[in-house]
Length: 125
Image (cartoon, rainbow, N blue to C red):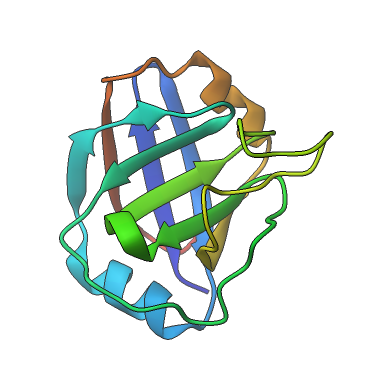
């Protein structure tokens, strides 16, 4: 199982990637660092990976990592977004789910708009 480390401000989490082509492309692009944007309970940032939709999901689960094709963005979902209805977690448009946060993704509530987010490969434990 491939694992990545995500750091933003005082937040550091480990996440695991699935076996999708999207996950493969993002793994190959690491390490990445960019200014994060917040949109409801989502942190996202553009990455230098250009992919099409791959089994794209209109609603995701708490802690999912998604790739948003229209904005070439890496997305971390930790709760409802402005597009959500009720407690569902709805991206702006469907995303390729390529992994999920291990542990409590709600720690991303501490991340502020514009804070630098760094993603790197983690050593398998």
